[in-house]
Length: 183
Image (cartoon, helix red, strand yellow):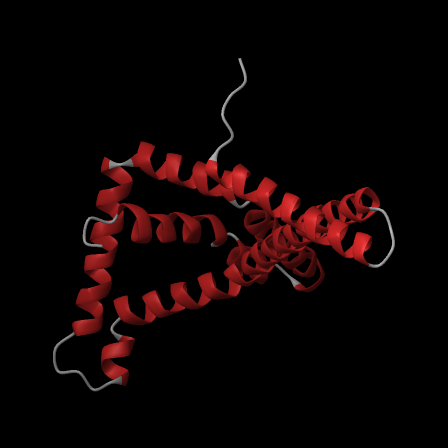
C-alpha cells in the first residue's frame, strides 16, 4: 500500500511541476519541445533547491563550530565574573553597602549544586541531546582546547588549567538554561 504524500512533500512536488510546466511552455513558445523545456525546468528547480539546502546546512555547521571555538573565552569570562562576584570584588568595585553581587553568586552556586545533586540524569540527558544536535559546537570547543594545550606545553601549564573549564561551563550553561526551576 502506498502512503499518502504529506503536505510539505506535496508542496515541493507542486513547485517542481509548476517549474516544469512554465519552462516547457516557454520552450514550446520559442520553438523548442515542451518535454525538453519541462525536464530542464524541473531539474533546475531541484538543483537550486538542493544547493540552497546544502548552503544553509553548511552555514549552520560552520556557525556551530565557531560558536564552540568562542565558548572557551565566554566560559573564562563567565567564570572570572563569578569569582569577582563571590569574592565580593564586584560589590567593592561598585561601592555597594550590601553584598548584592556576592549574594547573587551564592544563590547561583546553591541552585547549581541543587541541580547537580537532584537532577544528574536530566543534566546528562540534556548534555547528550545537545551534543547530538550540534556536534560541531563541541568539536570547536575541543579544537580550541587542544590548541590551548599545545600552547600550554610550549609556555607552561597555566593555559591547561583554563581549558578544563569547558566541560563545567557546558554543564553550568545546561543547568542554567534547561533545568533551573527559576527560569
